[in-house]
Image (cartoon, rainbow, N blue to C red; front, side, top):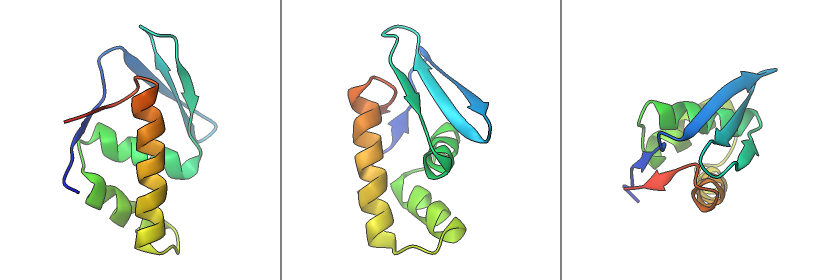
Length: 88
């Protein structure tokens, strides 16, 4: 999967106690990310793709790439559903 993702202009984020909190100002959808989700969000802000996100998480945590990919895809799907992310 070579999809790229964009963070809409209406979405703002802040780091609170090492974890990221997202808010879509247009829809008022709020989303909190744990430490792994925060790594993914950081990659999204740098316009990195799915493969790079998987590598980043696997480098930080001792996890199997196929499981990490599945979990990241689930997270991205939730974020898209809440209007916090668009897929290009």
